[in-house]
Image 1 (cartoon, rainbow, N blue to C red):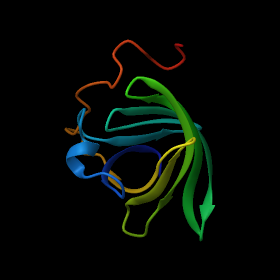
Image 2: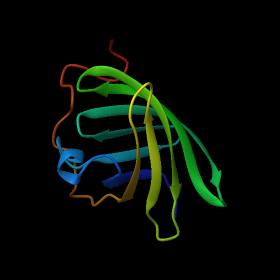
Image 3: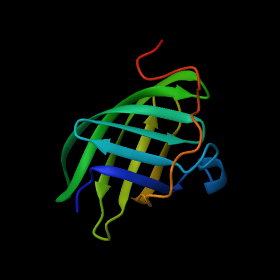
Image 4: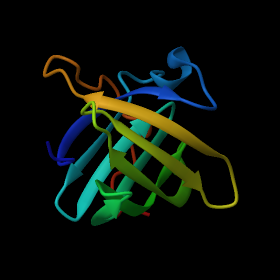
Length: 124
């Protein structure tokens, strides 16, 4: 199994599932050297580096985006687990950090709203 593709964030250490899914099902998605995620009112676009952690496929990433429409950035990582899930950690620059778990996305499980309707990647 590979990490590429869309994953449903099913658990985070700092927030409960209702908060995580505030704007629709929380997700993280990897496409080559890029990716994106959304949970609570946080959206991020990632610069990804593929590798291994403890012999398992992994991705380390930096990200920039929005937290309740305010600029935000940070870093993180994910590792593919033996059961086919992802385990990872996301860090906010000068802010919170949280571990998370994710499972492959169900095709019917699509995000419903954007955190910032007026901002998109690259707009400032």
